[in-house]
Length: 314
Image (cartoon, rainbow, N blue to C red; front, side, top):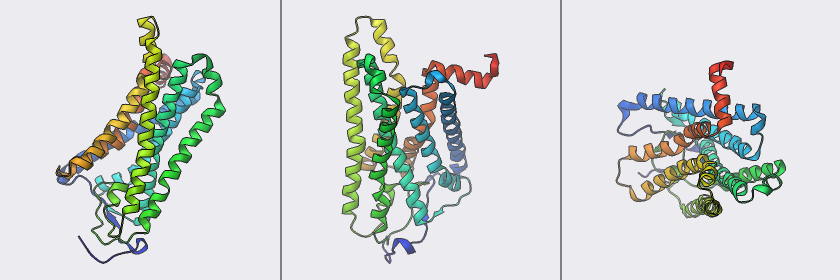
């Protein structure tokens, strides 16, 4: 759809979309998403509280888990306002600046999650392959530096996106495909030359997700090689068990992300609600399942959680 070009400063509000073709199910969708939000927010808040309160969890592995929980809370709170407005109150308008801010934070936390999973894989690599040097390699100061590096790198990659969009004229229909603002969705709307936007977008995706996933894979190849050198089968399983939670978190993050990318590239003829549902899985499932998995697999967190839920009777 064509039309008169608009600068970003005078652009009419964007229109958010719930589930195209499933308008009659919007309230049920909000009920489902509301449950996911509650589990995600309460679960990650409990993880943070337990790590803060239990002295034995004050070690690098759980510091990184705390950062992952904070990041998952960020993802949830970034999408919550517009999802609540769209599915519950049927308020579908969002201003340009608000949309840019939401897009920035959604992608910032997404990029940060990839970096956090990478440093967590490094933690597992040191713990298994160089256990005697674990305390000297992963000092508190180094953990802080690694966390700051993840945050700064993600910020520097995402920061240009709103400004690259803001410089473009808009003359197409300003209807978005989701109940929140995403860069791949927004980049379809300008009627100017988006070559720079496409190149920069591909660059940050490859340099962030591509590099991180390759390094995570390398760390597990080295871990597996080290584990296979252990003579006892029982010891091998016990060692690998310390990586199960992290491996699940990696799969829950990267598999939906790859699915969304494949659907966008090869599933163009699929109904729009299929793309919307896949993006919902990508943004909602990892923050909800991460605290559940770590609660199940970490004995100290499990015990403290039982005490909180059952009182001092446990």
